Length: 101
Image 1: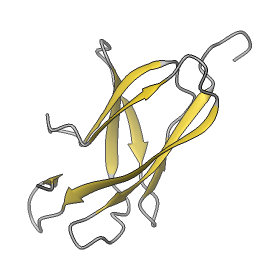
Image 2: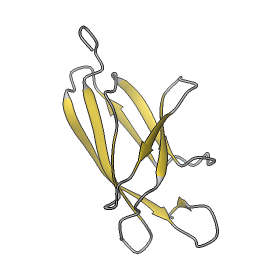
Image 3: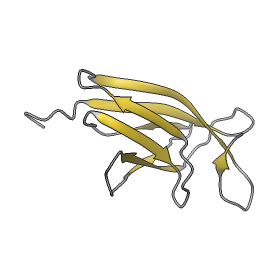
């Protein structure tokens, strides 16, 4: 949007416990202090990308979980695409996914 400071997209790759891509997963992205989350989805290669984000601190979770998969900060001067790298989960058949130890 014109005049907005929401000028950063965040991308990363979700992988499972065997270092394989975790395709077609939903993730929740929440800015610190916000009550609403943004839904992100992984593609078949496990890659996710946000829409335009404003500067601030963010947390990435799975729906229905309070475990934080990743934390990152979009700086005041950050523009373009910011790659937060690999985010790892453990995928258990028949059960919810959780953070690997």
